[in-house]
Amino acid sequence: MRAGNLLEVNGLKKYFPVQRSLASRLFGQRPGWLKAVDGVDLFIREGETLGLVGESGSGKSTLGRTVVGLYEATAGEVRFEGRPVKELSPQERKSFRQKVQMIFQNPYSSLNPRKTVRQILDVPLRMRGVPGPERPSEMEELLERVGLSRWHLNQYPHQLSGGQRQRIGIARALAVHPRFIVADEPVSALDVSVQAQIINLLMDLQEQFRLTYLFIAHDINVVHHISNRIAVMYLGRVVEIAGSEELLTAPRHPYTKALISAIPEISKIRRRERILLEGTIPSPLNPPPGCCFQTRCPEKKDPVCTQIVPTLKDVGGDHFVACHLY
Image (cartoon, rainbow, N blue to C red; front, side):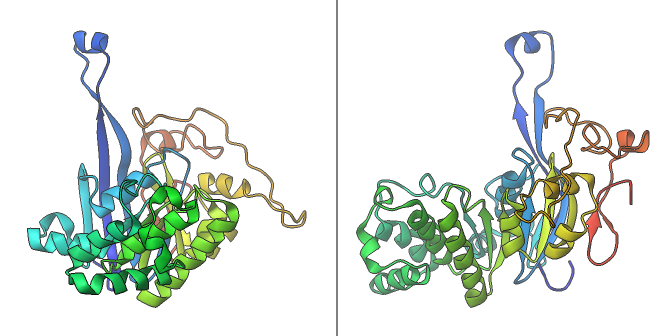
């Protein structure tokens, strides 16, 4: 593990079994596998934010959930603080679960509707070992840090706005004093004005508590604003990783170029030529051989792109690309 890296992912795979139809089973066909994450390599340095972008179904959320341990990996390795997570003892795994937290996309479904904010925050504080008499003051301090007040402690999730519910989700994650947080599209369900407030809150909290983020989102502009580096996923694989500015100004992978060309620009001077992708969007149930993007790539070269899986290569300046063009 490289010095300064808090988390490393090596060859990570997460496959979900898919049962065939009755007729298929009668004819002896085996159950299929949905390859949500198919061999991901990346690292996250301590104190930085790695943004993760890609289309719906690219495997972003599955990757985040596998990293924190909500899903068990099919293959590969997750290393945290230099140690493989799968080799941790039960006591060490409990510590890992406190150090690694997750903020979910939908703040309403991730909160128990039958519990008040006080009850929701009491669980992580109790897990951290905070004595009962000290918990009320801790709760008030947590709410103050996320921009809420003690008045919200006795409210239920349905009595709060979307932005307030997400702030409760952030407070719950902070309650156990984590080092690493996976933010799984934390602003996609919120209004644009509230999105900016939550993004700024996350950045302030990162500075206060020296947090490390894996920030998952669809919107490249949002990811660019909060991230130090950005990773691009397509069909379960990371196809490019680079610094935030570097990726937007000098993308290398054809898929990244197409994503960035779709960003709306008000200024006619800065407006980019739109790259429209053609071809068939593959299914993770039956990914194509070779490069996962070869069915839509305007720069495909036969036979190398259709037969050989490209690996992430350093093209200089901490810029990694999985493409046979480089």
